Image 1 (tube, rainbow, N blue to C red):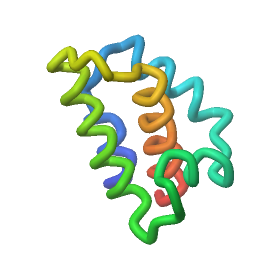
Image 2: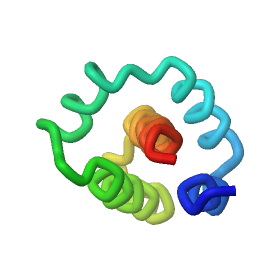
Image 3: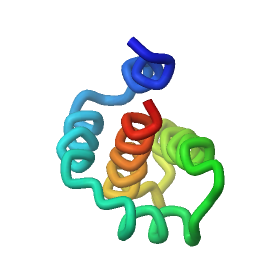
Image 4: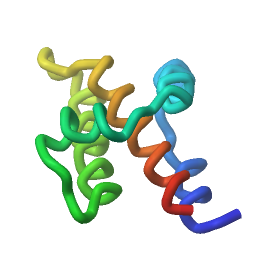
Length: 87
């Protein structure tokens, strides 16, 4: 197992969130999703996505009213697909 694959396995999130992200990752289209998630292309895509995901996880755990499960799934699926691509 590569370092990147091991990192994907080590993300501990609710099962339903991970299942939705895995399904979404199958249809991941980098050209359309990354600009929307990052606002522009970034040289360090995985790091930026990871920071976003950690922020969303913090919001989820704190039960922040503005937390968006849809955005969390999109960011998680992009993170999974980008890590897979980098492997």
